[in-house]
Length: 134
Image (cartoon, rainbow, N blue to C red; front, side, top):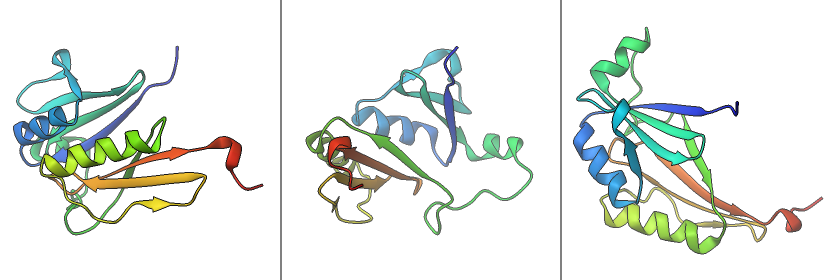
């Protein structure tokens, strides 16, 4: 069986988060969705569990980091092209996401990202493996 990754993220308002990510083209698994959480489908084996903060807190014994004041994680997702990177970030910005930096073009690698409504950073990147400096 292939390993799956579930990134668990605290959110203040689950509906707002679902609405935001739906505008970016993501879907959600209704089997793992209720008033406390939802499972966002990112890839074949990649999922983001969006958990209402009170529910998220039941899994940890320390404070929840405030994504608007600091960062604990960068979620990075690869793309097949620069255009695909731009398209998802532009959708996020139009849906209410925040621009936190300008695109980063290193020639063989291109990246750009956004902050979601809870301040989590989503980096999207394209890389040309044939052009990576040796």
